[in-house]
Image (cartoon, rainbow, N blue to C red; front, side, top):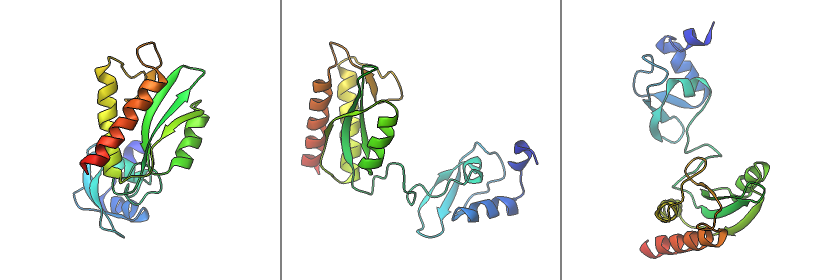
Length: 174
């Protein structure tokens, strides 16, 4: 069966695909592989919107997954540098060791600052505030929304100071 046909699978097949990854459809998943539909984690009851194609590719509950950001879990805000490309990244993670390993593979070998662990929602707010402060300085991302080129107007020390202040403000507001 070609891939295009499999996305037009009957409801029973879509239910089997969902059960395989521990979720159940709340909304009808048979219309389009690109249109998010409501699903629920069978084990924990988490609810979210998922594209049928993602479920078919065996992507289950994002809250129960071992990777990816979780606001409900403790996390850290960090600043890493790729010295060869002259880039800096500010980010958040619930799993610092594995995240730093992945960044290292991409050339971001210098961890220059990391906050202490804090509630995830505080770290998310701190990241949002820090990225807004960097944008206010006129720096535009060179990749994604949190990778920046180092330049006279944006030094590593600037990013560390911005991140540190942002996490401090988020903690004070909590």
